[in-house]
Image 1 (spheres, rainbow, N blue to C red):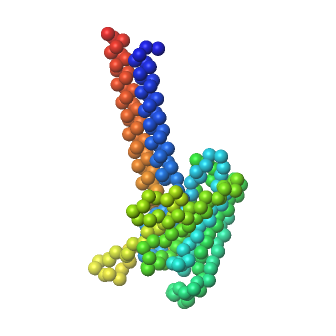
Image 2 (image 1 turned 180 degrees about the vertical axis):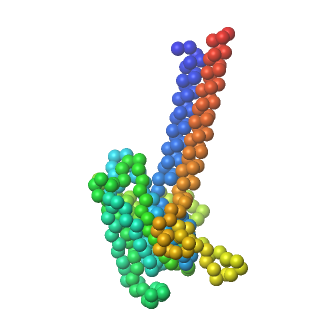
Image 3 (image 1 turned 180 degrees about the horizontal axis):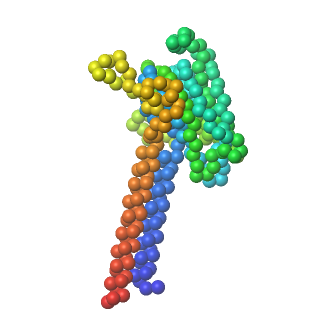
Length: 251
């Protein structure tokens, strides 16, 4: 093995190792349980998807539990059926009843549990989304925190319950959080409300059928962009080494 060949192999090995590290870091950063989209309008109806990736390579996810905040209850909650999964909805009595078009509401959904059939589990390298229609969203808070539990086939439970704090690093197991924004004024009328993401024609019943853009796609796009840059660097480096080898052979 001549000197140039050895140098080329060492360079390729270093670049490949760097690419692997970058991609692994990008994957880890986007592997949390999340709610998509992660923003909606106060007082509106919307559809969200709880995205659950399987982070292990030796076990599958069999159950997902999501707690809805009891201090900011939602009057209307419905779950989209998911083949191979059974959804169980739990309600709790409210300390302060909600007022709706149908009158007083004294209880609200506070937990949803999805349990997988054996053939529908979330396997290694896979993810699943669980759709829920919510509304009207509370108008007295800037966010809703949905603490979640992810159970694996071997019994391990990962608790996605840590609340992120502004100005501090992201916790290891952050809870899915939906940011709530104030309704934008429409045509100068400050009583108008902007439709929530996922709502179709302002009809919240149809919002379940909409497919909102997932904020998690941004991190995926960034990861793919980084991967593209790394691949480009690898290709450029190998190309330069190839030219050097050819020029050396010609001399």
